[in-house]
Image (cartoon, rainbow, N blue to C red; front, side, top):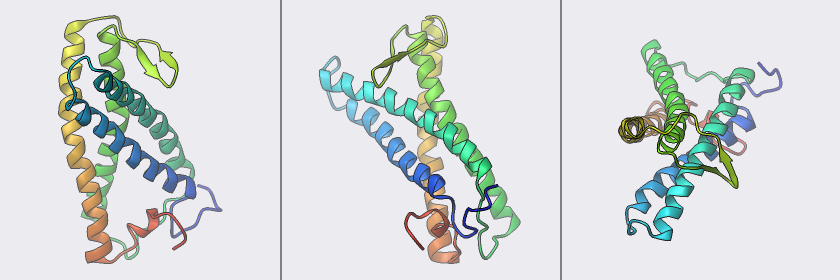
Length: 182
């Protein structure tokens, strides 16, 4: 743990990564939802899919940095301390969110790889993870779409819990992650 980190708030890097990732994940979902509004094969539809892929891979890059940051910086305690069952639910939800942020971009990369499509990443073309395999691409795409729906619920649960703690319990759960000086 970093001794210079505040004991009441997360590190500035952790706070920045948290909110940037929220914006990125919102953009990833927005791109894939908006692309449905345009005709198949249209430039705008293809552009939104392209941005969906690149932003998803950006989530993968940042979540790795975020996990490292989580291990090397102090985690401020919640005051007053919640019951053990709430801490257990919070840990489970955080683990699920991290698994989601790792697995979804990897699944997208697998889909493109198995579909024998290029893997765009801001001017780079990333290597394929697997050989072309239409059946595999279809199966992973189904999982990706299913877990994309699950992601809405995980993110919603996370946000509702933070708001519940802030407005009902009135502890410092949310304030620990808010930007700015508190």
